Length: 404
Image (cartoon, rainbow, N blue to C red; front, side, top):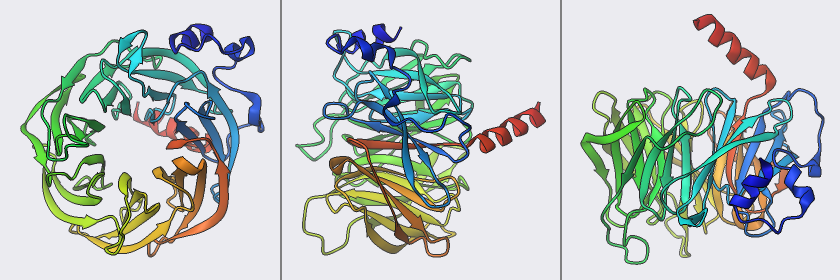
């Protein structure tokens, strides 16, 4: 099976010994015991030194990351998603061709909770080029994906064993916007299900729209309010909900702004509350926004700037309005993605062009960031996903049992 996957990716020249390493490589072997602290999976681009999907162990007392293993034979796993049931991990393969046909693909893996090893399950084409985002619905039944260069989005059913089945819904976006260099056509950049699983939202950089779809039994259909239109040339990229479900936040890649949105869950509709800058007013260089996350407490919002190479921090008011806190250097180049640990004590910044992941303390009162003093080298890190500790998994099982 491992050899088949490698051949699909056109890696026939890889040495024979590599064919048996998909799932885990012993390059950085740690203890095989239970994972007492959370794990972190790292998606990368594999055109250079990167070997695939890296797994690290995270010390949630100090913020230190240590290499655990790497899953090889996976081409351009630039974005990852861990299923809510914590059993499976899904990866895009951000390519323009798959098995000799135009388009990219997605892969499914079973997670070994003790070692963080990934065991390949299967792979499916996405019918569009450069898939750049995957997410899993709240019930771990559907895999949602966005094709960047393809300008499309869709849904795969998931089996109980975590395997990706044939596409159940596919949407091709049409149109353009005002930036001739970036917006000649649609570029779906992320897809996020609503907290109640009734809607799905696709940020399309090429259209300057947050597309809104009804999401029922794996089918995407245009909503009564079909989209939220943003400022021409803004370039919507990533989108996230506030924990209270009343607000959401959209980061715009091209004009480096952040939108605070009020959300009506009955209609799946948004209203713009506020637009704020992600960059300092006096910044003169080239920079584009990338990732956005809300602190688990719901008090703070964080966004990444590639070029200024910083994280911008805002305080979130009870009305959804944002108050500027600070800019903090990521101590590296091109922070494409970052993640906040489940306790809210640390932020990890993935610096794509300096091959590093840097840890920061989060002040629980102010939201400010301070370097924790730890940096781990990973080639081309572009996506970070936390994975619970064994203790957290045990607690989840207890909660699920009590609901039966």
